[in-house]
Image (cartoon, rainbow, N blue to C red):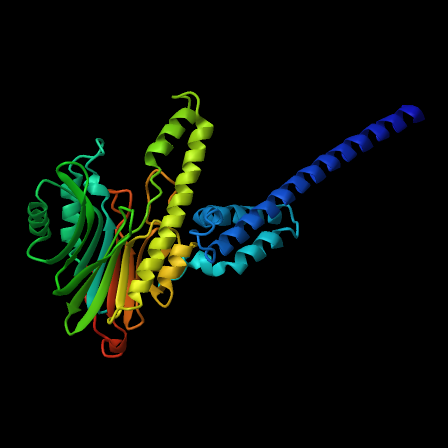
Length: 395
């Protein structure tokens, strides 16, 4: 090989290495820009809890998507570690700054104990007993069997549904649960002979019943003053404003997959408007409920379907001064919604400091698009007295 040929070959190899290096550098820069974008989304999610959606709703979108934005940032940390780049610190620090938010979704240590408890409370969005789901058969009876098996002292139902006479429906529900209960129903008409709403059903006496009115909305909040042994609690049962997306979303998905043609932009706009209205309406509702809670003469338990995540204005306002049963005594992922939209945590049990949550369960029953949640309580000042006493969790 001549000197000239060797030089040409070396020059060609150098160009290949240079091109390869240029491609890697370009790819790295693109990934870095994308990583910074994900961090900005994470920061917006953090800020969303402080911005009232009734004033500006847009930031709330990022709070809604927080679990998935956080997961994308975790993926970037892993990717940069594999590339042996210090850029991994960018998302790592951003995630560390919001570690408390992660704890509201996932508990890494099991704080719950099968200790003595004085009250078992269950909250469950039963989605109208799945009456409109043709693929589900006998769901009503399966749900009743589940509720009877769990046998909570206090049961908070959302999206309760009855056809015909409400009193007859209430009587059948009580029979299905195994006997007489104290009840508090709030129902609204849904068609000529149907009603839906929320219900609090208690083994303990209910000495007062009331509701928090949400003007111009089908969302419902009721409160029941319940005497458990010698203690009285005010239990709030909530079903706050939903996004009302199901029909719009299914049509859009059909169109994206080619089943329908045209109109995607308009439908996306419709979804966006529904989201914004949902955020704004919930903000007004949670402010209203919060004001009412502050006038309670008794320790409070706040349960139900908030239709919002722990990274939200709704959750921050509702939880203020209260404890979260999942955070205090839950374990693993706290996702309670399992419907058509991405899984998320939107069902809660919050409570005053006067009581202690000893355990928390998410029952993986697939009868609704929500999982039921169960919290076990005792009076906080009886913790020492109950040392060494145990009872089965399901009693």
